[in-house]
Amino acid sequence: MRSEQGLGGAGGAAAAAFGRAPLGPAPRLTPVPGWREAIERIDLVPDLGTDIGSRTWWRGAATCVALIATTWQLAPALDRPIYGVAAPTLTGSDWDEARAQSIAPLALGGNSGRRFAPTAAVVPLNDTPERPVLELQASLPSGDGLAAALERSGVAAAEAARVADLVAGRVPLGDLRPGTQLDLTLGRRPLKDAPRPLEKLAFRARFDLSLQVARVADTLALTAVPIAIDRTPLRIQGRVGPSLYRSARAAGVPAKAVEAFLRSVASRMPVSRIGADQTFDVIVEQARAATGEVQLGKLLYAGLSGDGSKLQLVRFEQDGKDSWFDARGVGDRRSSGALMPVAGRLTSGFGLRRHPVLGIARMHKGLDIAAPSGAPIRAPMDGVVQMAGWAGGYGRFVKLRHAGGMATGFGHMSRIAVQNGETVRRGEVIGYVGSTGLSTGPHLHYELWKNGVPINPGKVTFESVQQLSGGALQRFKSTFARLMAVQAR
Image 1 (cartoon, rainbow, N blue to C red):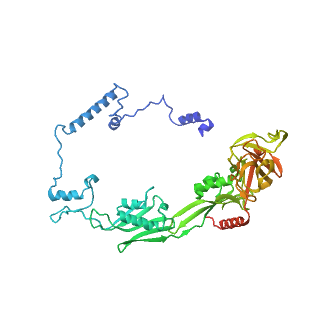
Image 2 (spheres, rainbow, N blue to C red):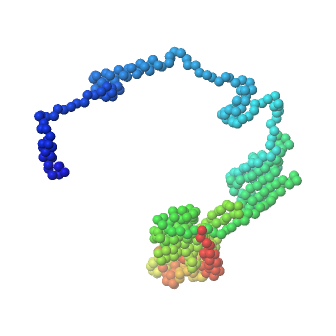
Image 3 (cartoon, rainbow, N blue to C red):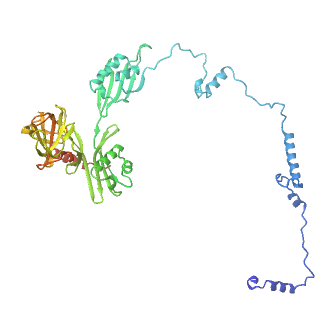
């Protein structure tokens, strides 16, 4: 309070007024240290790196020398040995028993545990006894046969050949996959230099079949054990998230199936348009054996939904080829450049020109392609033969009708290889180059019409869309309904 009110000096004066006034300044009192305080103030181990040469430093150096001397005096003599107590050396049966209980390196026959040393009751054997039965495992190597693998495992050549014949009667030996595990049981042999007889052989011949060969009354017999297989496809659904590939892999979709999924989707829409909130739907072939093994096959269905859109693609086999179709049975839209029907050199293009035979200017409605006589002429796309025969100045001529109002014509052939009404595929041979009709040499006159109007074949890109119909469409709808009935995992 005195400090807050500025009364510090006044308070001191008032305190002095109550007592006897001092005659002068108060003396300063210094306490006299006792002997305990004096000893405590002595530093026996000062820092010898500071105050070198001072009294404190010399006292510390003396302390260090005294400690070294004391240690030297108390140390044992270095010229006299130090004797210790050693265990007595074991000999005879004591040594044998101790050695049997010790842990030794494998190179010295190391073993552990309490064992008794041999005594006089132990009789050495003149011959090592054999096991009556041997159970072995072998793997079928790549590029080798079953009989050779059995012989390397100790089976006699005759029995190995017999087993191979038995197995070949049930499964072709070429269908046995390398790495197939063979479980063998070999019996007792009459002599040590003779091969052991095969008692039992078991292996997985196929994913759905196991074979066993057993000895019955000195005869080898084959037993086939079918394995039940559940072929219900595997269906996995999930959210696309930041990465469709990573999300699908994390959900359990095989890597190859994810790659096929992306390729199929990319044929219908840019992959960059796939949103993170969309949902993917994948159906993969699956074979689950009753023994627990699982095999995954190719992608069967690729679905993508969300953001107001829905994409459904089904793998469907037609004409021996797998293609992707949407839920309506419409295939991929494919575009390709004009397939030249014959390999050769372009000698005359499309347009107005001077006819090489008639010598007058007239419209050239196609392309002239010079080629050796007899060179094959191929259909540029799928179609139906509308006309095949002689056509005046065109000579031997073939006209094909294609989808979308397209038609093609081929003139000056030496020989025709198709008939009217015949269906031809892209790349199929329809005839051979010649020089029939108004022609100056072997070449092909190639024309193209769109709704009956001639157009330049060299500037046309063909686009085809495969549409299922009839029985193929019914089979596709049945396949699609069966896949949609699969429950997601």
